[in-house]
Image 1 (cartoon, rainbow, N blue to C red):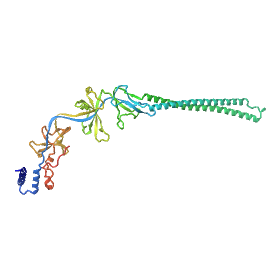
Image 2: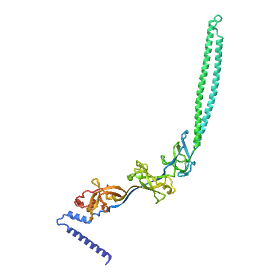
Image 3: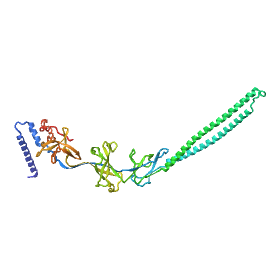
Image 4: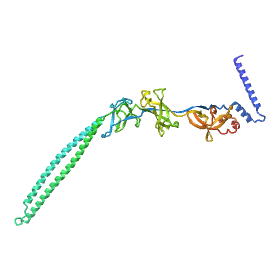
Length: 464
């Protein structure tokens, strides 16, 4: 017999056996059952609900840890600043800057500024000083000449007044009335000329002194500009205040360090030189994992360049507000400062500020706690419940809801304070939802698609 005939014979036998099974199932239904009940029986026989997965309550040590990442930084650091000098513009232009991360010693030059602008300011100030001095000299010479002329005029007026007084015509027997009046008028004119000469001389002296005072101000201003320019030229080199590693400042608009050609202002921070004898780690914890963060709790830190090696630390400080690490990101983090245990830095080898670290923060630790999967906890009636299986029960109908009190939760597990015992089997799915049949096939009457749940099972629970 050929293989094709054997295959056909096998398919025929399988079809006959399937028909016989269906006939036996229909015969088992009670007499008078409706067609809908028979159809429902066929669907239930073809697609039974799945088994409810369970998990056992365990008594073991519970440790809640949250991951975090961040960078090393120095506990203390010295800022390298632009010299606080009152230059003409108050700014400097960077001509050279040491490379980021360079090890420096106290006194090493870390930044040089472009002297072009300061040298021009010095030349301009020197020219202004020379001009002011020349103007002052000319002013003094002119004043001296004017005063000498006025003194001469005053002397002539005094001589005329003396002559008018000495040769005044007073005798009416000798001189006529006209001569006497004319002599008196000459005397008064001479007195007026002498008074005018003295007043003009005093006014010219006062005006000359005022002009010289103004020129003296110009001289002092030019001298001050020269001192500032010379001080700026002497401060064109910024040196390291102490030994350490040069970390260029990136707190700028674009987040870039100072570069050649940048304009910087007096008092601006250029870099930091951290003290490498004391280090700490600044890590960031997701806002959702930050429950329980507090100073003093233990942690472990692993430097990314030293995989597999963890160093003990403790939480030293937690920021009061969560902030996004990236501008515009909706994800927020709490910044946490971790302090290393005494003597840890000596065992870490060569580390630098800014190195990436991975940390694990231990927020909760319970010895001998009752631990269950978080999938086993549901919310029902405003409280937390678990579905505990009855002894010997096998299906979804063998579970009972038990109110529980929850403790701290970790990644995938939760501590149950009371309500269950070690070894209890808890449902990982809502038994009521698991006992419900799957949706009916297309064309099945709605009255048989979802048979009623057993009493007490209407309405499922939801996970917290």
